[in-house]
Image 1: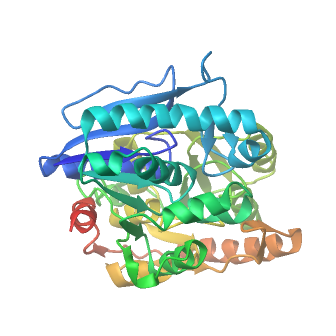
Image 2: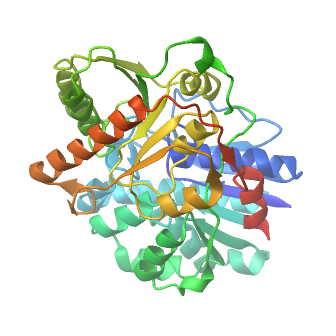
Length: 403
């Protein structure tokens, strides 16, 4: 069997990038021949391996003088927004032509049995349209699948970019997968796909890397808080720092792991961090192995994001025995409660949002109060938790996609 995976972003640095790479590892374990079409920059080091061949669309070059389009408006590497493409027909034309050229060349040579497109958005629609319009559908029986990551749903709703084209082609996918029933419901409404035709497959984590190493028994970790993700306001990082500041505890330390996208936002977050009595450290991005050690030396993990699919990082943190504070995101509580037992989890109700993931200052202040109380609850809880995670693995997800 041959699988071609396609993503309009870098195959790294984000949740969907991790998802892609873990699926590749799982498919490789099943003996599947694989290639990836993905966006990169010239200095990105992507090497072909036994597991996968990379077919890179290289941005910010003489022939393609634009940045990669980010599925979120703030990414941990330089990007343009899809709303920028909506306002600039020339850039949009370059973007389309670059991906279509790569897709046509790879398809003719590789002849995949299955094409897996990450994100139910413009590139997936473009691939589906080209597959049928170019006559590829007559060359070989290939099935095209689409995986929803939630950012695609948000992008579709907030950006006026070829919505009719996207919707009409997403409906032609042979299979559509979603992280939760809530996301399947939204995707069904947006793309006019019968709800029962969307398969809920959840999310996975790597239990060989993320497990309880027993390190908390050797250090005083109760007041150590960890955040992992993009350093941005929409990920709730500014609100998180304000919530920590409300605790007014100089013994608390907050470690923020992840890259910054928007430099103005990052500067604003840094300024707020300097007001804190607590110690706030910006640690940058980390490998998964190093990240596992961070989970294991912090008692509380927090993800205050305003919008997510089913996020991976809280699962990784829970698997190491950390207590978790997370926004009460659609579908997340139900998913965690059905797959995880023995954990300490605090779900913080989101602020009322406008324009998908924006909130007023008044709503943010109330959210920060709730977040602060949840953090305090975890800090004051000195119990060690033995967490059990069941039926959450990348192997199970890979099997669900193929069956």
